[in-house]
Amino acid sequence: MPGRPSQAPPFTPSAPSPYTPPPWPSPEAGAPASLLDPGTERDPHPLYRTLRGRFPLVYDEPFGAWLISRYADVRAALADPRLVAPSPGPVPAHGGAYRALASSALRDQVTAALRAGVERTAHVLASRLASRPEADLVADFCQWLPAAAAVAALGLPYEDTARVHAWCRTGLDHLGGRRPGLDAYLLPHVVRRRAHPGDDLLSVLCAARPDGHPLPDEAVTGLAGTVLGAAGETTARALASFLSGLLDHPRALGLIRDRPELAGAAWEESLRRDPPLQIVARRALEPIGPIPEGATVACLLGAAGRDPARFADPDRYDIFRADRGDLAYGSGQYYCPGAPLARLTAEAGLRALLTVLPDLRRAPGSRPRPEGLVSRSPRTLPVCPS
Ligand code: HEM
Image (cartoon, protein in one colour):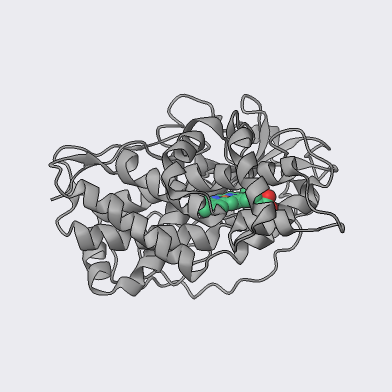
């Protein structure tokens, strides 16, 4: 229950040391179930508990990866330079440097104009629901707002949101690996930005000269696709879990209505408890304990976020939790550069819903469960808007 501060001391972040594999379990320890076993997708938490308790490092043969589940281990592994992010597609020359460029541009991107644009869109989306007796918050709100935020960040036309939204939904994986048609759509915008730069992310990418020369067009469109792929679907899923959690905790919702400054803590608590990306993959550049070179390592963010060694009463949803410090945005060199934009989107979305739809509640009899092993959230959220 919210309202009661938890007992654990505040978490002070420190630089994680390199990942140190725990002692390898003896064969007598048996083997845990696999992530791919039936039932795990419906509720992965029993398996997460077993893994954290008895198998902090284990090879999941059906899944094809080494699983790391404890908070401290996941944090160390994510920041360990011997464990790198697998590339979503063919790696272009300078790929890492280009991504670093997009990341640093993104971090500086939350301008007042962008904030105003996201707030306006949130208000429009909420107002469209106002006259309806029933709506699906996932399809009608959660999926649109992050797409609109990414469109605004890149400086693409607002009226193209529906097109971009469709790509975010169907054409891109988390980091924009597949994007049929998107490059062709983006190219004329790149040409225009080169001639008439603005202060949006696309202009920043067009103006960049990482090695003394402008980025080629295909690098700019590729990076914009990466941003859209990473921004849209992940934030939409996080928003669905966030709103679903609050609809289940009307007292927390009431507190945020009276004290809007609590929305950020509620967002963080939702990301800790129900991260939209439950699993982040790494590839081992060299042997690490029993992990062979080239092996895939799965960092279980969903298990780490509920590790009782790190969080008091970890299954409890507590917006006053003192022991924050979740890993939903990753850690180390790949830490999500879109975190401020995602938070802004969530806060603006919640504020608009609370203002425009003060009686918003779950539709009677509906309680959709979260779904998905890697990306996890409720796929629908039927509500009565008024
Ligand atoms: C709640 C929303 C979000 C969550 C939970 C999230 C989570 C993550 C995680 C866990 C990673 C690291 C992946 C890894 O370690 O391999 C990541 C990377 C990334 N995210 Fe996000 N993300 C969110 C929203 C966004 C948004 C809104 C944007 C862009 C506007 C974005 C852009 C990126 C990019 C470009 C990367 C790659 C960074 C790199 O490779 O250096 N994300 N995100």
